Every structure is written in C-alpha cells, then in structure tokens.
Amino acid sequence: MSRFAVSERVQVAFHDPPDTPRKPHLRTPWYVRGKSGEIERICGEFRNPEGLAYGEDGLPKQTLYRVRFSQSHLWPDYAGPVQDCVEVEIYEHWLERAS
View 1 (cartoon, rainbow, N blue to C red):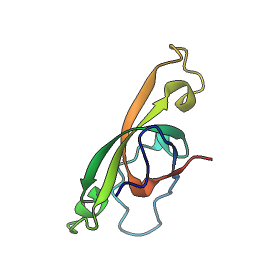
View 2: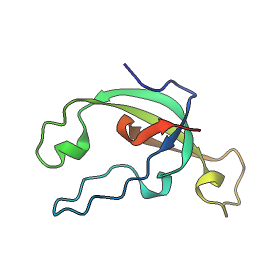
View 3: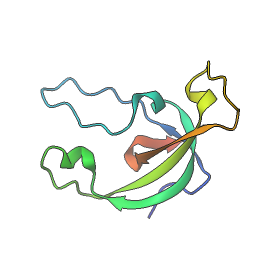
View 4: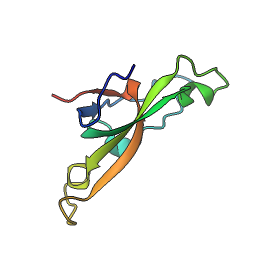
C-alpha cells in the first residue's frame, strides 16, 4: 500500500550520510533534498537499492515514486519558463508530507 497519492505534496528528507566506514549508497540527488514537490506517479514496489548495493536482499520492498519539482524552486536563479520542472524517482523512505 502506497503512503502517498498522486498529486500529493511531499518533502524530500535531508539526510546527511552517517559517519561510518560504510557510507550508504544514496540514490536521492542532493539538489532535491529538503525540497518539496508533487507526486507525479507511483512506480511500484522494488527492493531497496541502498541495501542491494552492499549485497543485502533489499527487503522489505520500498514504494518508488516519481516526484515533480518546479525548476525555479530547485534553483532560485532559474530564468526559464515558470512551468519548467524536473521529475526524480525517489523511494518512499526519503519522503514526508509537505507542511
């Protein structure tokens, strides 16, 4: 069951990698961390690539979402059309409801 619905506003968590010898394999780009966007689609459930990168089983599966961000929200100096956006696929454990 998906935690978020299409068109719902979400915010990407801002996690600093823990200070450990084994750094996590992070798929969430730095430029969207802490930013809010809108769920564009629910892609399905997949094994977590952050665990798979280290030979783990990647379970439990995580829901993957495509999140749409306004380019002007990501880059304040963006001078292109206001409707320009970037879509990024992000796993559920990186997302929270936007306030």
